[in-house]
Length: 412
Ligand code: NDP
Image (cartoon, rainbow, N blue to C red; front, side, top):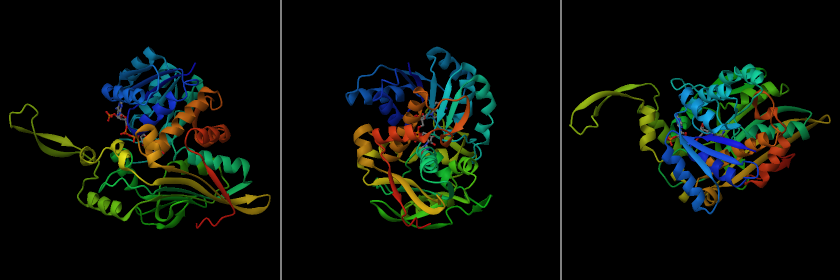
């Protein structure tokens, strides 16, 4: 039996839920729990409205609260918990998993709320505890992190004796026809892209100013797009796991308009993540006001479009992959492995846009690997620690087919 509890009912969770329901031979019992139960019930309705038959349980849970999580886990008794809430909840959910004997999977590394800081140390620190408990934790099983590491592992396994240069390239060439919107949770997204850039070269980490390094890269079926060097969490585990890597970088495309808005948001102070005092009207309708504390970025999130509503008018596609240079049989080899995903295809299947789709499908695929016993070993692991072959085979069948090019100009 495959008893799975998914936490979160946002864009990524919606896609994962559709995919779980499409694979009920593996996922036999399914519960969705989130901060607001009505979001979970709406999601179940959307799944039924698309004609799927499935008995899905729903529940309310505040995933910041370990005791609430424990009560829920002890009640539903999932074998695997898929965390598709926010990175802030990773550690509380891992704690509850340990307390209740549940395995764990997520798509983004832990971030403290008051400090936009991306690294695995907090979650890697749970390795011994998961090992001793005989439980598996799979970290970062979305597209990037996630598939980007499976692509690298696949290249290392089949096509390289040594990987020397790794560039993960992430292009969203879609258009949602809004002046400004983010493709996933705006708070998490803006925290990520306003960070300093970071890449790895010759054993050292090198910091750059935010979005300071960029160049045109040509994406399949899309063409050239300005691509910006950013820090991305999977680089941290990849350079550890593939010590022959001399340089590892991550690139993401941004349009001019997006960056102009981002600049304004920052200059206005709206991307701040510290609390400010604000004189707000009381909810009792008395017309009186009171000083409240708000976080500007959280307030901004409330006025921006909900990423979940972008799908309908979203055209174009995403293209995410790994460009790799290294040695095979004594010869230099270049290799490009990638997936292109059309926003409209994602929308037609799940009601969500391509960015949620490319994250939710791998989350389901990783969970499937767990239930099939293929990705199951006590401890805390990153995606490249597991066999990439069966995972990539599942992606091929579940809407994210991948392509390979050998010997091309990587532009990098
Ligand atoms: P959303 O904001 O759409 O969804 C988050 C969900 O979690 C919402 O349903 C939200 O509830 C719920 N939630 C938030 N806080 C709590 C809490 N304390 N307790 C219970 N539920 C909570 O985000 P996305 O779906 O866009 O992203 C989900 C995750 O996927 C994020 O961690 C994001 O970083 C990651 N991601 C990873 C990618 C990858 O390639 N690896 C790419 C894109 C995203 P409510 O609806 O009430 O707000």
